[in-house]
Amino acid sequence: MIRLFLILAALIATLMLASCASPLDSDVPRIETALTPAPKVSPSNVEDAFTFGDYHYAMVGTPVFLLDTTTSPVRFWMDFTMEQTNKAKASLIQSFRLKVDSLSADGYTYNLRTGQAYLNMDLGQGVEAFDVNDLPGYPHTATALILELPTLTGSGRMFQITVFLEGNKGSFVPGYGEQQVLGRFTVTL
Image: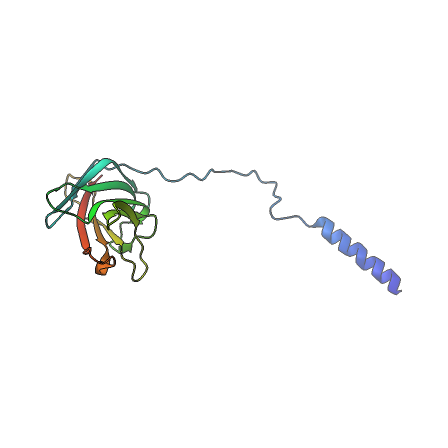
């Protein structure tokens, strides 16, 4: 009797397993959609204002500013280099580069991390590129803030990007002072 019961249970289990269909094995036609990133828009105009005290900085090369307007708030991709142009004034930060992606235009301050900004400074060994970092006590930092400005009638959307750089904070390398650079970009779509 037990043997008959075991055979019957095995037969029922086999039939149950054979009749099961995977939810992934559907006979309904499937539509496959490729995932492509949203197209990024180039602004129609970028104005910079990087004058901080006696230091004047200007763009070098071809700057890249791209915006993803399909998100809310808008996200920015930027890659640009600026160089100190007032050669009459000795500058610790001789040039700098920002290379960031997908920063949100939400009005919050972003502390840039390793790989997102470089300061070219001469701290006694000739001009060298120093990476920035947001770690506490790190001597070279960079922050960025992006916000959308109120739209004026008849004009495109406008954004303001504020960048603040600090090199050799707290005279980390003795004998060389600290330098700060503050500037703004106005980006118009």
